[in-house]
Amino acid sequence: MKSTASADCSAVNLAGREFVKSVIGMVGSDMDLKEIIKKEKSRDRWENGIDHHPKSIEIMKFISEIDFKVYGDYFCWKFGGDGDNGETLMYELDAFFEAKEQK
Image (cartoon, rainbow, N blue to C red):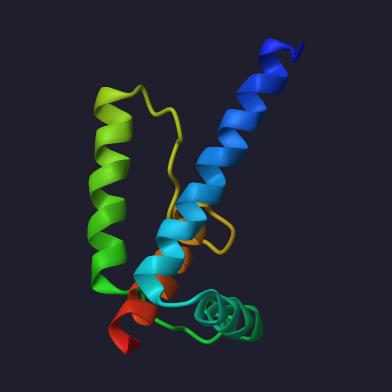
């Protein structure tokens, strides 16, 4: 019999795989996602001064405010510096929105 922790991890892994499938559906094929990952690995958004996508900024402003005021700053989103968790999530969102716009 699986432990509760093991069962929880299995459920999380299944949810993660389903999420990845849904993202692939949003940006195109699995190959498209591999190309996006390759492109992202080859660029340095921070060093090259690449601006965030407007939708990334909009989403992060919203979730950071909700996180702080409603959820006790659980994620403690930070912005403005390379490596801040909010900056990193915005770079990931940038890649997503750019891929959708190129589709």
